[in-house]
Image (tube, rainbow, N blue to C red; front, side, top):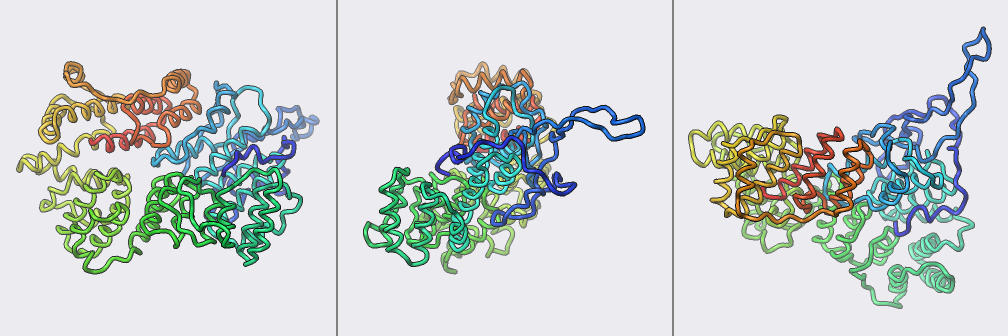
Length: 592
C-alpha cells in the first residue's frame, strides 16, 4: 500500500468495538480461509486481555449475579490468532513507552528472507496485548500494526485486526485492503463489482483510479481516458505510472513499464491489463504481498516470474510447492535436461535452478541424483540462493538414502536439510559421516565440514578445543587462514550467544590470532536500545529492536556484531527456538 493506513481514516476513531451478537463470538479459533477468501472475523479474534468487567459486589445476599460498570475496551489492545504463529503474552509491551513503539513500529522489516524473523514479526503485530504506557490517539497503534501486516502479505490478519479494533473509518480501510487483494490476484471482475458500491468517494484518488481501471477492463477505454483527464484536473495525488499505463492502452503513450516504479497492486493490475511485461527490476522493489501478482503475470519474462516466486517464497508469501510447480512448468527440452550441468551456468540463476530441478527429478539412480544435487546446491550457494535451493530441493535430498556409498554427499545433504529445517534428517547424514570418519580421511573431513551447523542446531552447545582445532585446520587448508578465522569467530560468538559453552582455550586462540575480522557495525542507537530493553525485561521492545537491527536483508546479510547481540537478546527473552533459527541462517550465510 502506497500510503499509510492511518491516513485513510476520515472519521473519528470509535473507542469501543462493535457489539457481538452471539455468545461465544470471542473464540480464538484460527481462520480457515486462504488469502483469496473473506475471513471469518469472529473465528480469528483472540480472547486474551478482553475482560471489560470491573470487580463487582453481589446484587443481593440471595444472588450470585455480580453487578459492575463496564470499562471502555482499548482498540489498540485488540489482536487476532494466526495459523502457525504463537501469540505473545498480553503484557508483551509492559515497561515500554508508547511514543517509542509507535515511532519504531512503521519501520519494522517486512521483506526479510527469514522465516524466523517473519514468525516473530507476525506474532508481535497480531497478538492481543495491552498497549505500552503513554498518551496517544486511540486506535493509532492498531492502524500501524495493520499496515505492517498488509505489507507482509498477511491481509486476512490485518482485516481481522481492523474489525476487532473497530476504529471509525475502519470500513473504508477494510474495503481498500480487500480491493488490493483482488487487484493483486488480478480478479478484476470481483474488484470492479465492488467499486460499483463505492459512493461518496469522488475525491479519493485511489478509488477513482480503480474505477478508471474497471472502465478499461470493460473495454470503455475512451471513458477511462476521459475519467483520467477529469481526475488530473483535481488536487488528488498524482500517479504518473498508472496514468501512463492507461494512456498506453489508449495508444496515447509508449507501452512500457518504468523499471524504477514501485509495483503497487493497482499498478500491477494495470500493467497486466495492458499486457505489459513487468521488468525484473520491479521484483526487488515489490512488497511481499505484491510478489505473487508478478508471479502470475504471463506477459512477463519467465526469469522475472521465477525471480518473483523465489523472493515470495523466501518472504513467506508463496508456498514452496508453488515454487517447485513453477520450476517444473519451465519449457526445457529432454536434451537440455539430459545435459543440465553443461547448460545451467549459461542461464539466468532462477532458470538454472528450474532446469536442475527438472533434471534431478528425471534421474532415478540415487548416486547420480546425489551428484546433480551437490552441483545444484553448490552453484546456488555461489549465487547467494542456497536457502531457496535447499528448500526447493529438500524433497529430492530425502530420496537419497544416507548409506555408506553416499557418505561423500553428507555435508551437502546436511547443510541443505538444515536450511530446510529438517534437522532430524540432517542428523542422520552427520551420523553417517561421523561413523565413517575413523575409516576414511574424506569421511572425517565431511563430518568436520558439517560439525559447526550440527553444533548450533543441537541442545548441547559445547565448543570444545579439540573439535574446534581440527575444524579450523581443515577450513584453513581449504579456504585460507583469514577466511577460516572469520568463520571461527562467527562460530564462537553464535555458540556463546545461544547460551552454550565455549572452552577458554578457544577464546584464547581467537584473541591471540593476528588476523583481523571484518564486521559491519550495527546501528549504535538500536544496539544500545536492544541491550537496555533486554536487560529491562521488555519483551515486545526487545523483539522489535532485534528485528530492526537485522533489517530487510535479514540474518544472512547482517554482520557478526549485529547477529550476536540479537541472538543473545532473544535467548534472554525466552525465545530460544527463534534465536537458534536466526543463528543457523546467519551461520550458513557466513560459510559455516
